[in-house]
Amino acid sequence: METGINNILTKLTDSPGVVGVLIADEHGLCLGARGIAKASSAGFIASIAAHSRELTELKSNNDSKEDTPTISVDYGNR
Image (cartoon, rainbow, N blue to C red; front, top):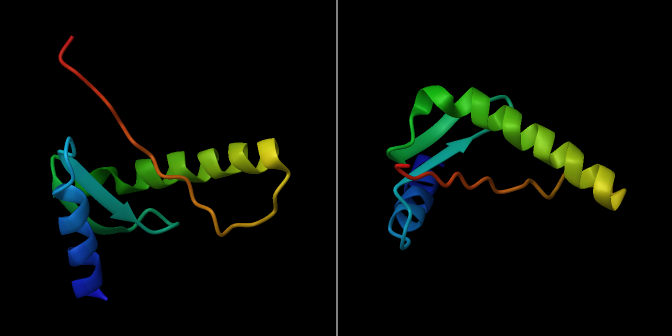
């Protein structure tokens, strides 16, 4: 499993414009992080994903837990 996660992290990190990638499970356990993504933020990111999923379910009235939102954080030096 670790090799699969490493391959996914590498593929995502090599995408244009991506500077950090974090993969966490539904409990906030960090499964892997690359670039500027910090493993210590995995719990916070998992919480955002859980709330995003709830909003998606409310919008679509869909009880499927299969679709987990992808969270993209965009920031700049302003």
